[in-house]
Length: 114
Length: 115
Image (cartoon, each protein chain N blue to C red):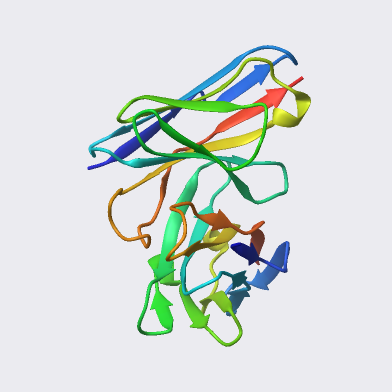
């Protein structure tokens, strides 16, 4: 069975500081991994995905994520946080060999403090 | 370009009343379609997905049902709403037939309050 864990419900970071939003996953084979962002009262927007190859994936709005197979993690990072980055972030996983559905974590609310 | 429309944006319904949420996709053919629910303070739960007209897969047993009467139309329904059906419902689509690394495109969501 596939699952995703986001251990932190809330992450606070000062503007200009680096940010990390944590994600670990569990799948039976090799995963496809995704990060989505949800701004207030809106749907989700795709940020980035890991398919294969380079473990460091770069995405929208300056975000990047590092795939670590040994730790089964896919943490989202940004070198310098902006107030506008404040939102709800979701990690998601899909098994390459399983069904076509996408499993999401419970979300992490990021607040960037001016 | 592809767009996804979901309505209504907000809905307040009494317990026991029926529900119909509609989602349509434009600019693409034969998409995979999904319904997710986001309960307050919780993650997204996949409710249904569809790989074609009339083909519905349900992920969890529940009070809800889904239908896909047309290629780009996905409807979420209930005959009698429960309080526990309250939440934020999101429709999404992705390319079908490709690899499973395709991303999902989400609608703007429907906030359902059952009172």
